[in-house]
Length: 408
Ligand SMILES: Cc1ncc(COP(=O)(O)O)c(C=O)c1O
Image 1 (cartoon, helix red, strand yellow):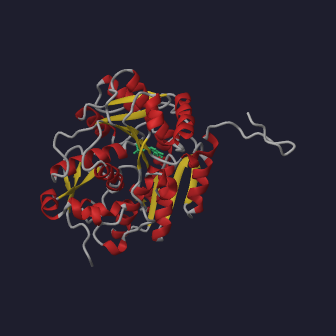
Image 2 (image 1 turned 180 degrees about the vertical axis):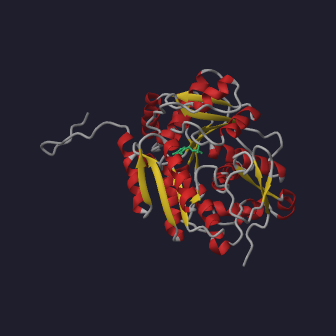
Image 3 (image 1 turned 45 degrees about the horizontal axis):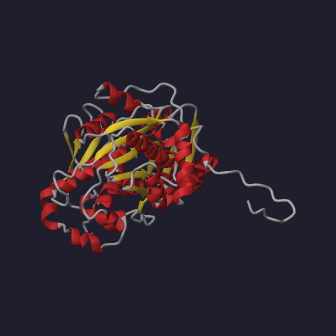
């Protein structure tokens, strides 16, 4: 067996710092129910890993293997996760007075969203630890991604999602062979169903932050961004925040990179958590100075991925925002649709509603002066707009009579 990452040492409770064994199946902290985070021997990574060596490896998320919790390379479950492009967005940047605007386009990953990162590492780890049935609640895209990687690994996958989840995502998840159940309400209602079933049947609960490895996959967004910017970071990162795993993951990734000396200690981007006015628990908690959010009653937005009434890791998101001098902003569905249209037409990028929310939040912050004209701003477009067929913008096609096109 070739050891890929013998650098993971243990799991640590994100609230009380309790120690947990890394090579045993774990979920949340037995003491306080908080998420567990993988810890590495960063001193050894510093001694043994080299940035130049990373640059020579295949352009997939596995190139950061010293900082991933995988033991056996031969058992990695992969659909070929490419490094996603970091694109300049000059036309739209000029329009909103952000000349140094960039979009990290996660829509090119397998299953069309960044959820592939979490699923690739999460399913790989589930296989290593002997899991045979995975169950998870989802706002949609995570269910599709875990279904795909589960199929690839030959696991049984049970997915529970709100009955308002976009149709393409529901059908896609079923097409990977997962058992799909639709429930009224939000991901919180789906979560309650999964929790009961896992307790009853002994299935592995892969809910956001209830298993410790999805975040390790998502943190590779941060590694990639740093590498693509020549081991430096932007001034601002705007991220559409539902469960907040991507944001917490990048925050963790940057801490690890600082610790091993690959980025400067004072290179700290301000995180912006973008939410919808129809579901903004983090924004409200941030504004109130609270350490945790309160469940958002009746969450509504067509940006399904950020329709999360209460995140298990909300206290970590809020900590990340405050520690980095960041902020949280809510935008409405109309603004989200406008940005989808604008980005499609001016940049040729079909962003998902969640990615559009992040850009709309940044545009508001620029208008308020919180973002300065010279700031380098990276927007995470977390998925392809193709997954939201019913929400795509643009003029309706016209029926053509007589076979002659007008020149108008
Ligand atoms: C496209 C998209 N963007 C963003 C999110 C929110 O992700 P996170 O849990 O990292 O906040 C989701 C979650 O479902 C999503 O599907």
